[in-house]
Amino acid sequence: MLLAGTSLAQSAEIKPCKVGKDAPAFGFWTWPANSTIKVYVISKDFEPSELSYLMKPLANWNGVVGATGSGVKFDYVGDTSAPLYCENCLTIMRGPVFDKVKRHATELRTFSARRDQIMTWAHIVVDPIITNPNALTNAIAHELGHNFGLVDCYSCKSKSTVMNQFKAVNVPNDMEGPTSCDIAQVKLAYRELAVRVRPSPVIAEIVDEGEEPVDDDTPVVVKKP
Image (cartoon, rainbow, N blue to C red; front, side, top):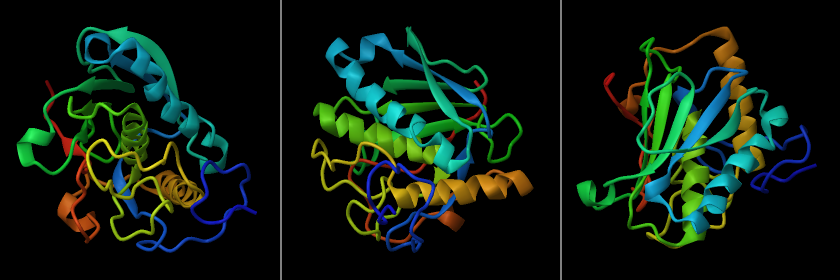
């Protein structure tokens, strides 16, 4: 049986986890169940050598789709010259994030056509300040957690969840994909989703209390372009 906080579950049997201690809460925006998310990378924003570091967390989240019960898989389509706004499209790009608040260096921007928690499209924005390739992998793995509705957990034990905070910009946290506790929470999130779809989340009601992270932020809702 997997222990809470181990990386990438190989079994559906998961040790119970405690929210706020070793597991994140859930309730953010979420991709529709059993959907294939088309992933694009803005080619001019990343070096060719960085592509594999972007793909690794996508593969790791895909690897636990059966355990989470979400049915959500990421399909890397290729590069693009500009952000995309198509249904079930995710664009990975660079942009100014860190300079806005001097607190984080990545963010998830999302839009819901139905004005509920179901995402129509999303952008993962990585500030150019992140240059360490392993930190890039860790940041994408974390932002993908937001794609499944997971909330930041700054009070969680180190290595217990991919939704934990980063110590500093460009300092890897060695979290390349979901832990068993993350998998358990995504499974619960999609069980709830099968029963009811929440209205658009109100960040103030569901953000974890705790120290602000250095290079992360909660999802940002954007208006239809």
